[in-house]
Image (cartoon, rainbow, N blue to C red; front, side, top):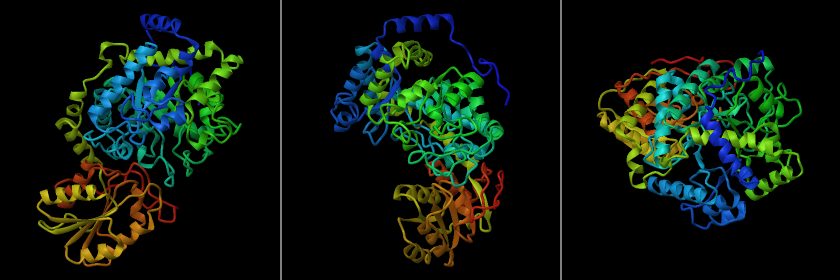
Length: 564
């Protein structure tokens, strides 16, 4: 790929008034505040003033408010496991109080973020709209669906006081055995991924919620999970240009606020052996200079093993800044990480000019998303009513119906009024959603959650048909799930199989009467699958990835396949 001018993919430079405001803000910031702006922290607790031992252990202070006032962090990221996300009113109150702490201690508002991809990766509490995820959107091929899904996520986040979704996944998932991307990707066609990623960014940022395309320069062709190891991508530069980069170029063209780095080694781009997150040739040489990106570069979590294999936790953020990153996400020891950067500044290794470059980008993002306005605080009492509106639920249902993909059909639709057992992988709650949907369609449905092969087969003796779910996070379907399907297939009942995560399960489960790829277990997806069994829904999706044979070779189902 030939080098392009530094502004070729940049969309909308900051106007003079914005630059003047950034100059004013920078002039009033101390060195500690500038360094703090480069960090996005995890804070534990449901309230900003709630002491939590994990805060003490990971940040040196007790509460979220103290993390903000002591370390001057530029942002927070929320998770259920850090006790941040109990219910909409609590989330909104926490956001308001966190912002008050930021405004009181330095006057710079926070960017509050979450990994809000929807599908299998979501963070907002119920009743946030249970949207199908990115591979489901890939199965629809619809830019309109991707844009609308992004808009719903953005509006719901802003209603609760959050401003950044670390989404969309712009990785092109060409490796069926990828353990970490899978259905989080739009698919295996780089042009389709580019088109849908750009549409989702348009929807998110149209709701004034920052998007972050991830994971640069492309995490789609690896069988190693960067949470626990350091993957190596062996693509040539030509393959990178043709396969990995088009979605990121499309994101840049769309004006994406942030791009997240990958903890992967890419020898064709940097033969030093360091992960992309810490690579100057990749972040500065390729992303900044060649692709012309001038938005925020945010690292993936610095607590992941993929970025901790070569350097200590105090050194990793220094290396990331020197490589070209602006924001350090989730360092495992915040005080240690900030101290490492401060030492590098004191030693002249990181100049204050270099700090200012990153702080400028972060402040520009905050200005463009309206965080320096009176709209910073949200109404906690109104938060829940903004989630799962009738319009957003209709959109989720339409996306689901257009995404579910029929791979085998020797038995559908089932006879009107048939008795149907719903079982297999999935919580009792999800089984119940499918049961209710089937009963609404005039079947006589019952559910059996957490069943082993013997119990499932016994329950199938008394019904006409079985809807059995599997859910794999990689290429191989777990043996116990396969055993349930095969035990059911040995009964007299008609067996309809549905995969509720990766679509590859179909080649592992043996002979079934029908098989449907759902790409996730959102309520709308389960309802759409029920509709397919009744003949009320035409499975509208086509495979956005190819499915290999069970031994991992060849192609059992090609990209674009679908019987709907």
